[in-house]
Amino acid sequence: MKKSILSLFLIFVASIAFAQVAPQPLFKPEVKKVLFLGNSITYAGNYVNDIEAYCIAHFPNQKIEFINVGLPSETVSGLSEEGHADGRFPRPDLHERLSRVLAKTKPDLVFASYGMNDGIYLPLDLVRFQKFKDGIQWLHDKVVASGAKIIHLTPPIYDEVKGKKIGYSDVLDVYSNWLIEQAKKEKWEVIDVHYPMQRVLEAHRRLDQKLGFETSFALANDGVHPAEAGHWIMAKSILMHLGAKEIIKAGTIQATLSNIENPNAFMKLITERQNILKDAWLTNIGHSRPEMNKGLPLEEAQSKAAELEVQIREMLK
Image (cartoon, rainbow, N blue to C red; front, side, top):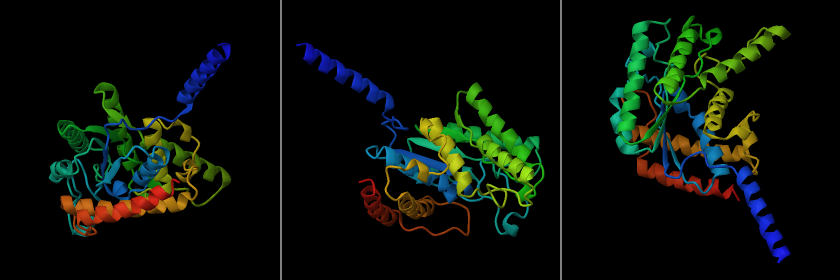
């Protein structure tokens, strides 16, 4: 009798210990479709791919469709500078397509990344700032009215050393601060990717200066579009906000994929699938930006994506 009680007690203790260390899914069970809205940084998709890869690798039984509909050059403010794209076309405005995006994708959760283009690369102006705030409020209300949840991202940083638009870094500080304030005032869910990127950039620049290096470290060689390291900071900030605290010291997405035999091949498959799907979704939904890739018919793209899904799942074995 004593042995039975002891055995039950040990099982009970073990179950509690397992519950404490077992990773919890980052998304609630009812979340089946996660949509990413934004500009060219979102369209590039590296941070989206990183998030999807982490979720598949660590929570393979939670089937979530990650949909990337980022559109290069887009704003939520509706603004466009004179001579944009050498005068070929004005910046696309999210107002033109959002209703179609929500109707066709039917997301449960939306991540929205705007701000980089919304100040149109000029010093801070209160009229432009108000346009940005109005656009974000409209976006927030529109998504909530559709029945989905929205999480706002602060804009990535602008690097004046590389981009040469003096004063624009401060503009994105102001835009980021306003979004962070909405988390406190309006109880919005906001994830800060701006200041984590800024801290990394400034730390590297200080080290460059201390070592006497002539070339400055950069997260974005053109000042705007982050390379993989910048995208990983974005993805890492999002994943940690959602609960993946254990990745705090991970320097790359591959470092979080220890349960995958070949993380680079795994990432290649996920990137290939996302590249097929994002162009298909953009073409299917429609948009006002010329000079974009023409995507496959959506059903054909989804069929190819399903074939890649088999290969991705095989790597989990």
